[in-house]
Length: 234
Image (tube, rainbow, N blue to C red):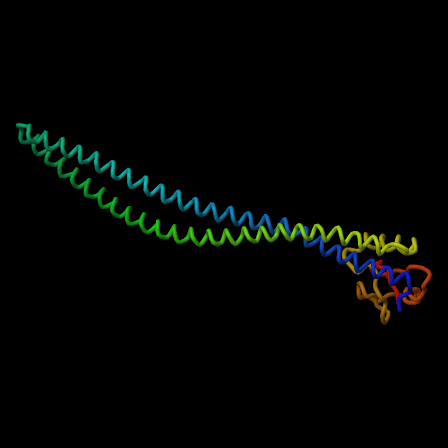
């Protein structure tokens, strides 16, 4: 059985580990929140990009309409000039210009119709995808709200856990608690104090020397694994 000082240190360790877990959970929350916020920004950027694409298509359609109107104005002038000319070659030249302008207008109108159909399809897709994105964004914002609430709860839990750690350290022999604190700084992760069983350290799971195995039975002094430097007991 653990000696009294070790029993107390095991309580300290348990509370230290609990505190460490809470602090790790708390530290992850800003990372998770930033990831959600970045996702929302990306989602909103996609919506805006689709909206700008629609606007660009509509601008292109209006530009085609302006070109058609300009061509129609030119066509009217050519027809007026054709009535007024006397020479056959001038008449034929205007006829050619009229035919070319009519062909241009027809081509522009076809482009405009195709673009209008494209705009209608794009608008339908945009509205559908926008609705889905808004649902996702709403869910992500709810997740952020939950993270914020959890962050507050964990922050409060950290303070409570720190108090519990301090309470558990009261009454422990100064040499034992100092050595425990030293080990906690040395090793990368818990446990900081481990049982020796079958000549193996319960922390690193490596075989310890006979001297360490015998020393772990000594209730008066702290002893350490000669492999990982954790405090050990038997």
